Image (cartoon, rainbow, N blue to C red; front, side):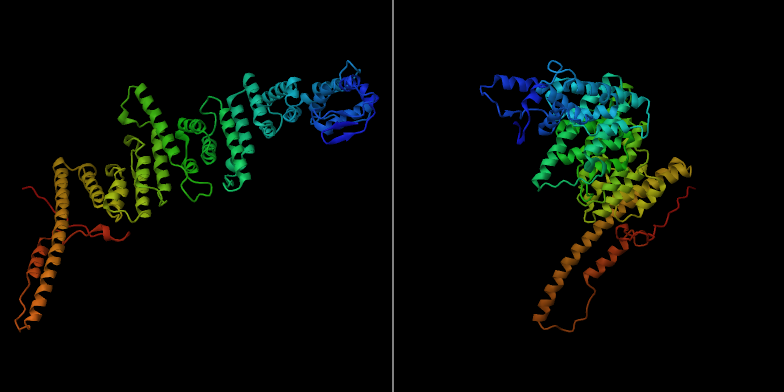
Length: 541
């Protein structure tokens, strides 16, 4: 009887001894006169493969295929079923099948390599793994350069059945054979999408933190992702940016190592000019899209690109304050549009909003209209901000860089602080008088002085309003005291005289510089026409 694990096989010794050197030695070396039990639990492939080997010993027909040939070869070596004991033994039969059938096709070589993953270290010692790697890598290179069928990346799809170590060996062999970076990148992307479908392909991220099984799955996915990133070729532009952004979000979600995330951020920074708003949003939000996920990675990516542009400017003996290459301008436009998207989330703080905006050099923005749109959206989403906080938000944009339409909108925008509205009006008038209308410098200077006077009058009016409120409170207290004293003394029929308050109010009202003109735009609804002050004429005689 032969024991293989928990399986028992009742076989004739002489049938096994004729072809297996190991069984022959065990019987000859046994101290028992009649050996009745042999333990072969260490045979590669387990009971199923031993049963097939036993059929061979008995002369029973069986099938050798790409799935069992490696295991049969390892079992033949373990049982010493070689030509030394029998001509045409199992070892020779399996070697012939490997050489003339299994390894002649790419699919066969990959299938055999997959089966070897459960046969280590036997398959490695017998060079089966290396033979499979050589055959598969050679045929993959040929197929990548001269596709024989569609889709053209079918060979990359078949590699996805392998474990990461076997896949790594195939890629390394392809690289040593001179495979193109594009072909290696194709294989890596296909392998990643197949291995991490929930994170990279379907974008569901359906991994919870409460179930122990899910935690184990998450750990396996983290290790796999780190291994995949470690296989990336040195060329930073080998992968499309949307694929890198998906990987980085997966890395953040799985809490991979810092080196893994830094590598992905560096690669995205290198091709930042090709990043779209959607790509940045992939990094920003959680898989359900309900909450902000990570802004630090976005900041580091933008900073990395800006630093690269600065290095280029220094190399070209340029001015760091004038970094406005076409790539930088595209990135600035993308960042402004990105700010407009994330500004709708109430949890976004002013410091984070301004921090991302200020990463882009001022010179990179020729027009600040997109940035103004983002600022307006932020102010609309955060209506409880006070005047100082709104001024902080608006500090990221330059009113001088707004288009005419944007300045008109800003001048009527009740959400903007007063100072920003005045700046928009001032620059608009200044451009109209000095630029568009071709007025002389005296007209531009006059307009500037007029607007400065309007600002001064507005401030004085606000101060008068404050003083008036204080006086109202003071006089209200006096009237209460007088009323109480007259009630005690029995009120007489003295005629009512004009109060000090009414006379002061009339005088202050005459001093109001805006009583015939502009109104407070902060309390005017959107879409309502604001009355403009009468334009004064200045004649020079």
